[in-house]
Structure formats: C-alpha cells, structure tokens
Length: 311
Image (tube, rainbow, N blue to C red):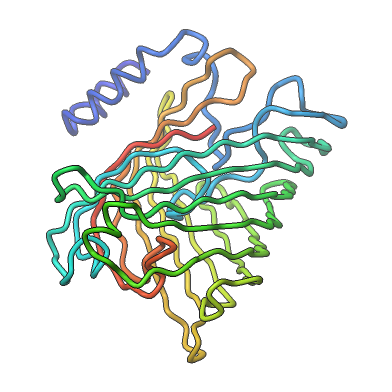
C-alpha cells in the first residue's frame, strides 16, 4: 500500500500534501475501511431493529447541489449580475458559507447493513459575502428547516422531504444598493430517487412549492444529477459530479441551472464502528439561475473552490 500511495503522490505535489494529512489521522481511522458507496454509513451496532436517535444517515447528500445539507466555506469568482455590483462584472469575488446540522429521530433498520427507513430533522443557513467591499458585506442569507423521510434498499434510496426556506438581505447590501426587496419564503415538497451502480450514482426527482411569497415564485422544480467516484485509495477517493435543476416560471418556461464538481473526499473515523466524517476539497463551475433566495430572477456564472464537512 505504501508504494501505491507513493506513486499516486508523484503525480502532483498538492495531492501529496492531502494524502499526508489524511495519513496523520488516528490509527482507528486508518484501520476502518472507507465505504465505496456514496454514503457516510451507520453505526456498527445499529444495523438492525428500531433505533431511536441513531447515528449516521442512509441517504447520501447530493454533493454537487449548492443547497445540499452540509457545512462548507468557498471562494467564488465570476459574473453575479446585480448581486454584488450594479452592473454585471465577470471578476466579482464572493465568499459563500454554509452551516448545517442534522438530528436523526429514528431508524427502522433493514435486513442489510445500512438499509432501512429513517426520519431526520435538519437545519441549514447559506450566506454570501461581497469580498470586493471593504467590510465584506453580507449579501444574502437563506434559512432552511427540513423534515426528510429517507429509505434505502440495496443501493436504491429515496428522500421524501418537506422543508421551509426564508431569505434575507444583509444590512450593508440594502444600504449601499437599495434594491427592490421582497419578503421571500416558501415551503416545498420534494421527492428524490437515487440509484448506485458500482462507482456511479444517479438521481432524479423534483419539488412542488406551496405557500409561496411572492406568488411570482416558481411552483415546480425538476432535479437530476450524477456522481462518479472512479478512484478509492486508503482513506480517500476522487469524485466527479454534476447537478442540474430547472424551475418553471410565470411564463411556463423552464429555467435551468447546473453545477459541475471535481473533488477529493477524505474519510476520518473518530472511533472504530462510528460513521466517518467526510472532508471534501472541491472545485465547482456553476451556470444558471442563482440559487440564492433573494436573487431568484438573476442568472449567474462562477468558478469556486472550497472545503466542506459532512457526516
């Protein structure tokens, strides 16, 4: 294994640094195999029966979805329309930060390890900051609360989720731009179906928005994507993924947006038997309707790099 790791590090110095940092994890982490499937797994003692407040999850996060439930920090550079400047500027610099937490309420485990039905409670906030402003002004913050019911069976997973989102502009942005502000909030019913085929995962589904404010918000959203993990080594794996969303507007037209991601995922197992934490270093390319609530009518394009944590 040592010689294989050494050959991999010869390819690129940056990869060598990442592998060395992963090797410095605890001995338990090194001995725990990194799951080849997309998920982060369940606790070794929670593989059967009815479990209250279980550890881990059975539905994998959609890694290329900008609004997936995870914690991250990223730097974005691109054309953000009127989000950060009065006129489009292809050299606008933005910091995007997400904080997410999940509480597993119960799981009814299936016959296979990791299979079953699980109910969670999730909360997330996604914020964007203008790095071109002297005080790094807060531009927008989206707050989400979700209740997902997930099912897993032999590589097939589904998520039925009801969630609420409300969005708020930052004070500095309001004072400097004086934009047309809307009191944006909505609830949504989402269904996502996912299938894992070896190293490939595909998914598709959609959402129905209700109690929309303003009423001009889209009422339907289509969602699909794919994730490929072609290389798995020791405590890490390489990832290529794409996520596509399209919303139906007032004119009945569908406005698409897509995000492509290349990444390195590193697993850290705090204690043997526990679900691992997955640390991800990524590069994104996004093009389409802005995923930020108050700017749902804007088309943006950017390249981003960042770091995220999921478990």
